[in-house]
Image (cartoon, rainbow, N blue to C red; front, side, top):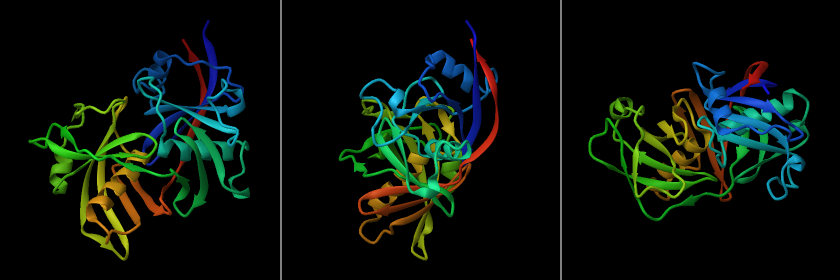
Length: 284
């Protein structure tokens, strides 16, 4: 039986999402339904789905008592993902706009598959504390169309897995063909988003590091932006630069500019969150 549901379209620096309010956890979306909703020709079009559900409405152990709301994030192919740095800012913006949360009363806690994340307002829009990160010990060899020989990539986990590859110049970054899936050797157990970065020259200006980045997101393809990927890219370049590297970064992606800072072992991501339009859609 077809079912009609409400939705809101939103984006963070061009990384776009369909938000579906389901506060009581009554909606079950199949992988095929998610893929159709995200299809840019036959659906609404998006990089992923954000189901807005109360933690208390989830099965036991799936939500968190420390966060009223849970971000059920699904990639465009229907697969579940641990976290989304752009998506969670858009999710917070939605909660605030519909009156389900008051971020001005204090940090807003949101549950994710990577744990509870807290958000505050910032000069760029919203800032999310992504928590601690992990630098993997072994390099991953990355093959991508347009860069010739395979390149070493650094594994960075910020709640979801990333592999960051440094490129020597902007021409090589622009020459990448990310319509083809980059190949990782060895392949991480759950796959990974792959970021290709070019540090600025000079790397640091007035205490802030700057880089450019393009990204291939697992389960999606190339996107205009990836929030956790931006954080991973800044962390990787900081790691390569050594002890003199700054703790504040700006990262340019095709969809805009995001801010990253490292504080007390945590990495924080800041940037805009925009709600575009709302409507209804019938699920087949």
